Amino acid sequence: MSLEKQNIRTLIPYTTQEIPYKIKLDANEGKNIYFPNGIDLSTLAFHLYPDNQSLRLRQKLSSYLEVPMSWIVEGNGSSELIELLIKTYVEPNEQILTFEPTFSMYKVYAQLYGVQYQSIPSNPDFSVDMKKIILASKNPSIKLIFLCSPNNPTGYVIPRSEILDLLSSTQAIVVVDEAYIEFSDLSESVLGDIKNYPNLAILRTFSKAFGLASIRLGYLVAQEGITASISKVKSPYHVNALTQAVGVMALSNIDIMKEFVSTVIDNRLRLQSELQILGITTYPANGNFIWIQSDIPNLYIQLIDKGILIRAYSAPWNGYYRITVGTNLENNALLQALKEIIYG
Ligand SMILES: Cc1ncc(COP(=O)(O)O)c(C=O)c1O
Image (cartoon, rainbow, N blue to C red; front, side, top):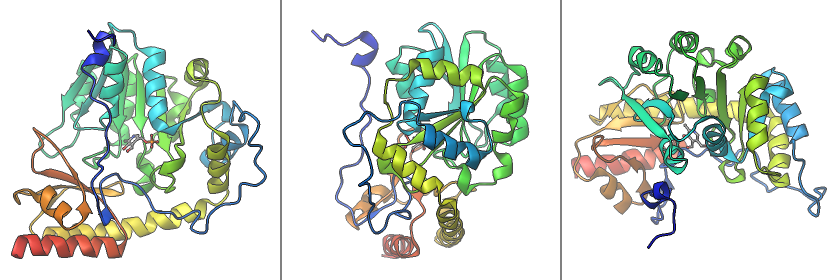
């Protein structure tokens, strides 16, 4: 008999694709923009525990974001912060509210903590039905609302005005996951609204625009009511010294990230129009990826056979795919492979 807790028994572990590939366009990673020549960490005190408050990192973040340091909590990837939010705020008989399709980890952590998970279907064009979310949010058992914007995998950006409508009409904490905001219209970010809403939290990550997925670094921004609660729950030394040091180095040269973002946006535009020319349906893209629909049979497998990994989705989103925007070379290889598949 399994000794696992009931809610863990049916949990499917987060798995990544272990498929041989030449070009990897499946995980929305960035490129090695910061340390193409390696990194000197010789001054790091490897024998000591890291700074438990990540002070230097949070100072740097505070000046980059123009918010007080006390509004920032660092995380071992923003994934850890999603977990800490649920751990801190949601009892087993209470609920998380979100929409679908969206980032899969909200549901995984909900199950892990045995809390209820409610997701409102998106409209047929993948815009978010905010009226329905506002209506559902009136239920007092809803403690956290996750809004991923730009949304992974659809790319949809929820208009800031709609997020503010929700914030004004709910007691729940609204978590806006801005993992891809750097690639989007920054005027839709709700960062500037934190001062007005004690129930607003923002999640961001170094895994995408900064091209630093390997170091596992994310952060949460919210007023002190939320950051103080999350800080009670986090494990000691949860963000290691190497990660903190690399994060500080990256934040000392923000222009590298900005230049990369503008290249991705240029490449995204071109890739999108080339995909359309091939008869593939594309949706408005606002991250470092494009959400597409195609009836080409076995497209995912056919691309794997050519050494190209993209992300496929299961029912009810059969025929939908998420493609990370690559370099021009990578995108050209993808387009060439698609031409061979389509035209033989
Ligand atoms: C929307 C969204 N949020 C959070 C994450 C997790 O990012 P991290 O690498 O910081 O854990 C991802 C990763 O793909 C994501 O797409």
